[in-house]
Length: 258
Image 1 (cartoon, rainbow, N blue to C red):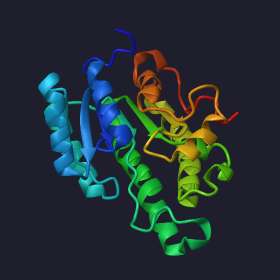
Image 2: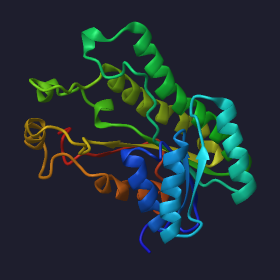
Image 3: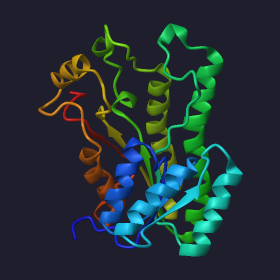
Image 4: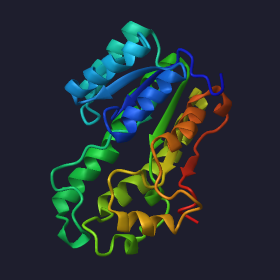
């Protein structure tokens, strides 16, 4: 099996989201055991039940709040007791407050700080606690889901005359996350723990046709991507084929950043 993840135990935060649901299904179909690590218990249990109907015992919901150390460590203790190992962490959650996504001049300082603390801070806290586990285990793999807008300045012209915007918090979080990835890779590399990030381009999610047409003109062929277009690169970072890839940011964007 290409990029086999057979019996790898993978903790996926934000597994109930748009990307997370697809990642969960795809990783299970390639042999992985996916821990659906999310704060949405109802959706997490439903997703796990749906997957286990087709792939018995290949997924499990575990309540997981990336902003609370006690929640993370309670989840890790449960996973370790049941499975005896954790092969990888995928930081994919995206917590945000009710004011997230306002236009630049409408963003309040407190909201800006809270959103950075919840998201970037949550990725740091989760990675820190998993890294402690991985050091004791003797190996580990951390993958951060970043974005092309952590690599380049936003193309604000795409959003003109639409209700959409590219939140300033998002740019700050994702760019910092890519450098945090490199920092952690350097910090942890002598412990047989590798850390990489994956930066997708735009993902289709009911955006207006005007925006989609503008976006596609900046790409090679497809334009906005489906979650399935990202999955192969994620599997690569999880699989043994990428065992010597460390501290890197892989961009999957149909040429949007060129």
